[in-house]
Each structure stands twice: as structure tokens, then as C-alpha cells.
Image (cartoon, rainbow, N blue to C red; front, side):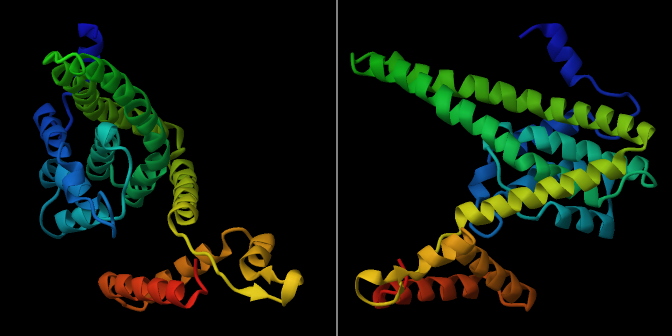
Length: 281
């Protein structure tokens, strides 16, 4: 990579509170991002842990606790370029401190949520769908010949671009966030950004509900050859209505104070019982 391009990406405003060293810590802490992955909020703990050096630099006391809570929300995207949204979040948090009158702290969550889907699509396509296959092809062909370079080249081809992009993404996200937010403030478009990001974030959450929640009824309506599955009728009215209903019930129970772990066991029990009795597939 051209040294001037690298310098431009890594360079920062001299008046910034967040330093290069802080962003380097974010990069290092992003590496174990998925070691803390869980089914409740997925990457949330890793995201907060990676951003913690910046948050401690900007906030103290209750404000630090509030900032950490902001980044303990549900989050999941490709881990290979997770530093890009981390850099943008760092820039936004810094703007919240330097110019609180023009930057709403709720925009931090809405912007990073809006990036979740597009970044996952780009990162997964490149790293899982392209680079991994290329590295496996080169490594496996040499390994089949008994060449020790097979596994070594696999690791190098896959990991060198990954860590370069992860490192550069930290600074690229931060610098893009800083300059982008400054332009938005000057044009008065910050509210439009927050509103648009909120809409995209809701679309992402809705798509994830339809994709990740699965439920099919096995209940016939009618008798004989004229019998029709209830699921077919429901899909004709509104495809995905059962996952939506399950999501709505779970959301309502969570709002009522039911803890996630007991709720998980309840859903498992309903699923097992439904499959055993034959009314769920």
C-alpha cells in the first residue's frame, strides 16, 4: 500500500482528544471480538471492550457508565472490518464531548446499527466467500503434495489482508466519522442523518427477525383431500406472521421483566413439546 495513503488514513487532527495510541488500543482489543459472542446480544461485550480506552479518555463517573451502557446493546456484523464502525463510534463519542449542543448521543447507536447490515454483507462476501476460498485452494494444493508451505501460505493469505484492513479500518472509520460529522454540522443535516439511520436500523432489526426466527405450524384445516395447512393460509395472509408473533410475544415478556435465560428455556420447551405432539415442524 502506498505510504502516502497510509499516512493520510492514520493522520489525525492535532486538536483531537482521541489519540493514535487510543485508536491502536481499539484495534488490539477488537481482535478477540467474537470470543465474547453470545446468543442474547452477540458482539455487544466485545464492542464495548474494544471501545473502552476511548470512552475512559472522554468520560468519567456516571457519564462513563452511560457510554458503556450505550455500547452494550445488541450488535453483530463481520468481525474482520469491525474496526470501521468502532472508529466511527469513537469519532461520534468525541464529538458528543466537544460539541454536545449539535450532536445527540442517541445518534451513536443509530449510526452504528445502520452500518451493521451493509458491513456484514461486504465483509462476509470478501473474507468468507472470496479470500478464504482462495487461501484454501492455494494451501490445500501444496499440502496434498506434502509441502509445509501449504498451511503456512493458507494462514498468510487469509490473515495478512485481514489484519491490514482491521488496522487501517480503525483510523479510516475515525477520520471519516470526524470529517463527515463536521460537514453535517455545518450543513445542519445532523437530524436528517439520525432520522435516516434510525429507519435503516429498524429495517435491519426487522430483517434479522424474519431471517433468524423460525416457526412453522403443522395444523391441518379441513378434512380429506380438501385439507389445507394452517401455515399455508397464514403465509397467504402475511408471510412470516408466525416468527413476527413469536418476536412480539418475546419482546412483550422482556418488557414485563422476564429474564432472557428463563425465556430461552420456555421457548425450548414449547419447541420440543410442539414437535413431539406434531403441531410444530
